[in-house]
Image 1 (tube, rainbow over the protein chains, first blue to last red):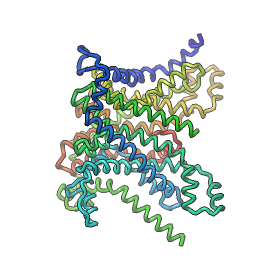
Image 2: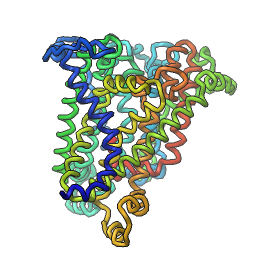
Image 3: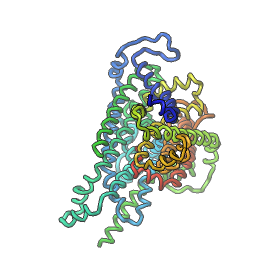
Image 4: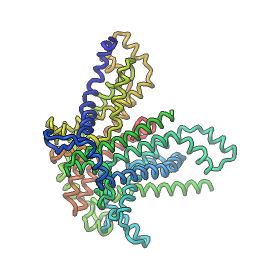
Length: 289
Length: 272
């Protein structure tokens, strides 16, 4: 038994193992189990196995389906918008401007405060009332006020825009790190071959940034799928269900409507989705190495 | 010519920076105004500087208590995350027995589990062990994030030469002593990174306090903002003052740790 020799070492893993098993794996198994039952909360008496009923109900529940669609839209739009903006931003922040540290700090700063506070702050800025800064700004250009948060389509755009505003600097920072590791020989060689600045950017910089892109896009996708605080604070999921994300619907179905089975089934669907993306990330990451 | 272009570029960037930061200016400047002044001109400087809004918000949100709750929850949770994570990573990264491969896979599985998936069972569990609406319960839940720290530590171990540990073992150091005296100090760079990012995550988290804390007595600072929204729907300056008071500690933390934060992101260790 070689395992006996490992006993003192297994002792090191033991505390983490207990905490993790009790508070992550056990709840996960319980969620899976309860998603196949008609559990009504409080006690576990009168529990019946209902097969896939809850899962079928999830896809019949218009609000859950809408929240899944919203979440997917959001989780596609945010990474695309941030990638398109963060790459050029990082190369500007990498140049030798005198105020570049100040610029980096200014773009990074919105990722520091809690997303809940940022959401509430923007709900003031986007308000249709007189203190709503954004509409005052729009009015300066002689345009009609925009219903930033009250129009269903616009509300989703607003939620995405505020997320981009808050996460842009962080992700520019990821690209910045990669940029600094690109050898200047590459640029010199291209320049000798007569490449223009624009060609340098598209033919040298962009391909070299690929590993950072894999990291940043996957991070953004996973965090966007899990998003809760920001839309909750900014729009409360509204108008109607226009910006309700899957996290919020799981909470509503469970804690508010007490439809535990359905809530848990949507939570498991969500888990499978996130797991698939995480596995893809690992694969892409492995290719990178 | 090139110089002019440089100045123009820099000016454009500084204007963009100003746009990034306007929301924070708006937030702070309006805390010194009455709702009427704020409606009249949201970006104007206040007529007179008064800290009355802050004084009221400070009392109303029970700042000292909420701040202490946030500090207590963050410090103890992050301490547990770091210790549990580093301890577990040590044999998983260093020992050859195949049981550790299995353990690594087991811990990695949790990487994919979103908090939202397990929140209802967690609620039941906390209820059962009477830790609902209790700071200790929340800390316990945060401590279970130790698998993330474990993963980062075990990656860091790969780049760490083994000779120092081996020399200590030959000198008769047992694994326990070896870990605390020799290994843990070697992990300092990654520990700094983990502490900073976990502090920011735990401090800013809203989902778990929202679900598991229900009384003012155990509220964190972020929860006070949520409470304020219902309370001050018409008193905007009070609401904004509450938000500023909640932001101040994390902004101070950011300013002190700025260098480490950027280094953490650029080292690629931190996965957002």
